[in-house]
Length: 371
Ligand SMILES: NCC(=O)CCC(=O)O
Ligand SMILES: [Zn+2]
Ligand SMILES: [Zn+2]
Image 1 (cartoon, rainbow, N blue to C red):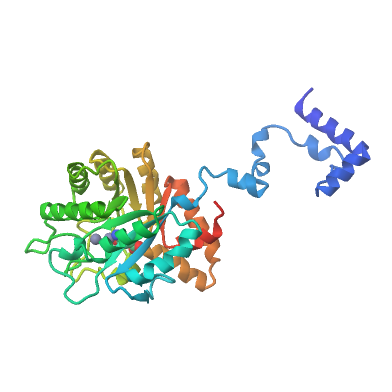
Image 2 (image 1 turned 120 degrees about the vertical axis):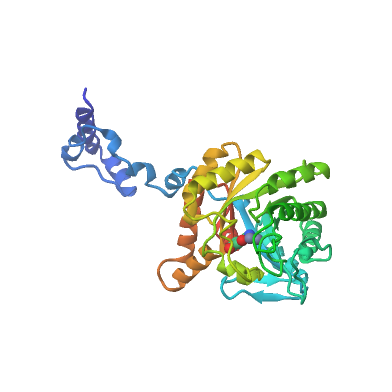
C-alpha cells in the first residue's frame, strides 16, 4: 500500500467512530472532512517541520544547550571605599560596591542560585594609581579582601578574579609602558602573572587575565605550578578580546579609561578572525583551562571558532557592558521586551558554542530560570 493511500484510508476510517471525533475535538483537533487534504501529502515528507516544535517543550528540545544558572558568571565592581554603593549611570542597575555592601547585596542572589562571580577592583582613593599598577595586588586592596570575604561568607560561590593592571595604572593601560607609551610586554607579563598568583593564593578559584599581553597564560600557569596550586586554580584566558566601542560603560564603572591612546595595539581588531583563532590556539597551548571570547553577540563566529579549536575545553563568552547597555536602551525605547531580548541574545551565544556566559543580566536570569 502506498503512503498516500494509507493516509487516505485512515482519514476516511477514523471519523466514522464518534468517540474519536469527540476526543479530537477536546484536544482542539479535527479530522479532515474529506480525504483530499491527506491525499495531497505526497513526495518528500521531510518537508513537514512544524510538528517538531509545536509545543514549548518540543521547542526547548530544539536547542543543543539550555541556559542554566551554573552557566552564568556575574561581574562585580569592588570599590576600595568600604561603604560605597554607587549606581553606574551608563550600566543600568549595576553598582560599584564597597566590602561592607557586597555581602548584603549578594546574599539573596546566592539564595536564588547564584553560582559564580568575577571580581573587578575599583581603586578610588587618591593616589591609588601609579605607573606600575602597584595596588592591583595590595593585600589590603579591594580584590584580595573581597576574595577572602566571599570565600568565608559563601563557601559554595565560585570566585573568579579578573587580572589586569588597567584599573590600577595611572595611564589606564593594561600593562607597564615603555617611554614611548607602548606596552612593555615582558615587564607586563612579569607583573600580571605575579598579580594572578596573589589572587590565587588569597583563594580565588579562577584567575582570568584580560590584559592581552603575549605569553601571559604560560607565565601564570608556570607560576601556579611553582606555587604548588596549579591543581586548585582554573586559568581562564580572555583569549579573543576585541577592541571596539562596547566597553564604554565598564570603563565608567571601573575607572579604567586610558588617559591617552587606545588599546588597539593589544586587543584584537574587529575583523581579525584569523588572529583570534591564533590567539585561542596559542592560549590553549600555553595552558589555559577555559578560553573566552569577548564581546559576545558581535563575535558569534569567533565563539564558534573557539569551540571548534578548543573541542575539549569549556568556552566562555563575555556579554560586555555595551551589549547590556544597548539591550537596556532599546528596551526602554520600546524596540523590544527586555527579557525576550536578553534570552534571545543568550540563546545565540549558547548556539555559537559557549557554555559559560559572563553577564550583567545574571541577577535577572536567577529570577527567570528555574534550573
Ligand atoms: N576586562 C573587562 C573589560 O575589559 C570590559 C568588560 C565590559 O565592558 O563589560
Ligand atoms: Zn585591562
Ligand atoms: Zn579589561
